[in-house]
Amino acid sequence: MRLKFTRFLIRILLRLLTHVEVRGLENIPSKDNPNNFVIAANHLGLVDAFLPFYILENNNLVLLVGEKWEKMAIMRWLGRRLNFIFVDRFNPDIKAIRAVITRMKQGEVLVITPEGTRSKVGHLIEGKPGVSYLAAKMEYPLVPVGISGTFDEIFFGQLKRLHRPHIVISIGPMFALPALPNGNNGRDEALKTDTDEIMCRIAALLPVENRGFYADHPRLKELLETVPQPAII
Image (cartoon, rainbow, N blue to C red; front, side, top):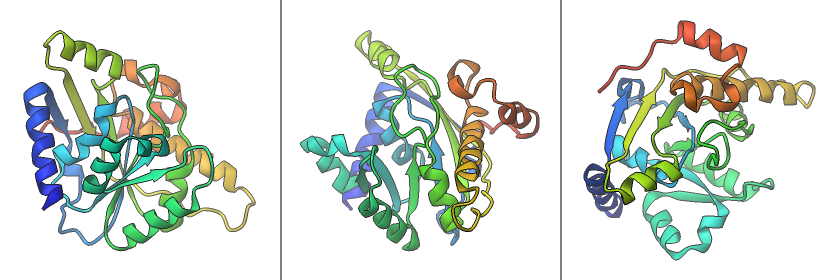
């Protein structure tokens, strides 16, 4: 009940203050689909954390949020209602990983940002291997999501000028990662390749100016030629 009411408030505020355009919503499995998955998105601004609750009907979303936000009372309050898991971004956080694994086994959908933090430059920064490790280790497919229009500096600047920011959420086709090598031999290289795959699939959903670190990646160029662009909903 708390989640439904909080989602209602999020939707009301975003509809009043912004214009949200969603593309490719058909690429998200229905909530009746028994197969679990991971949503991997880029992270430009503070408002990004609330967008999954705006576009999805799922009551079983779980979000990884940096531990620094746990110090704020309002974020702890939101975290209890929106199913946040606060995670140490700079050290192995076994407690958080176990919590994610447990919740996903219970059918919850993980929403994660492979960059590990908000971009301070307004475009993609290099991804970290945590999301690819979780997805490959647990054999969950991923749904890539590209978000534009939420970069804090521009977003809040537009709000101050009483302009409604235009947010575009592009959802790409689901894909799976190959199994990780047994043992440590070649694992780091495999994780790097997997992380680049995730980030390039996100980059393919973004405007050119938001592709940043991956703008000239060979894999991105391949994807732009083969991956269909999501339909506007």
